[in-house]
Image (tube, rainbow, N blue to C red; front, side, top):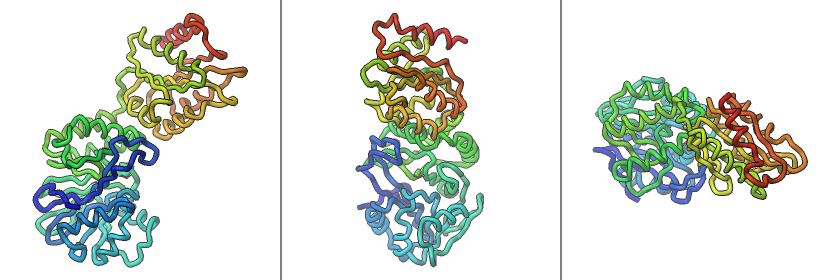
Length: 391
Ligand code: FEO
């Protein structure tokens, strides 16, 4: 396993997780990487670790450029186990290396691992650590993605090691975005943002604001490919600003599951009702799409219509799964609409609306129908939606 040169004396020593198809609940069709970096300077420094199960790959990459007994510092930007899982192994290989992290990082490391004998340098934000020709400085990015998250910057090289921020679950033999595709990297950055950072829009806006004051030529994240050049750096920062602003694009998402086809028929009617009001629609059945992929479209949507059959007086299981996930990610300022096909007892649409209420969304009055709609004219859903949406 070879390391890859990012720039003179700075190497990527991360690992590629080709088998990953789901990262704590969200689908990762392009898999992922856990990026670590080595800086060769008077004090050799490792930036971040890797997932425990793939530790050997990182170790080989580090050893292709240096030996662990020469490492002075290991920077821990974030303690989630995809970045720190192999920290106890790295510390065994480099017992002399001091861990540089913030106080929340130290506490989280102590809560995850036996850190007996580990020496820490606890940095405060804005503080600098010289490693020879280079200076490391640190900026807080709390909740991007955990309270301990921070980023590391080298002013001499204008490189930012951003850990989860600006990451993509994108695995490729090529390291640089320019060699893969900016379009693909942004697409995967969006999937990542929608499923990981969406609850933290406010913190993201603040972090991007701070980082805009820093002169950055390269963003080397903890996942996926490296953004290089001012144009790519500006693009991902502008895009993050746009996502974090929560401004919708005015379209509707219709998401549903169906038991015997009735809710599917309702979903078609909901779609055509929105379209008749010149509101673009993205309709998805949870039998054909992972609930986490729906989040990519929900992020920019104005209306979210959720359809469910009644099963044993409850919301259909796949729809519950989606709603639970949605509630956790807490997208704001949407308008929810629940529609339902029931058998002998009404009431499930209002259970869907409880999720909208928990999210603080506005609601369009719900619609339900007994058993199966026979012809579209009987549905009444178009009229219902039109009437209630214009209220
Ligand atoms: Fe990539 Fe929050 O860990």
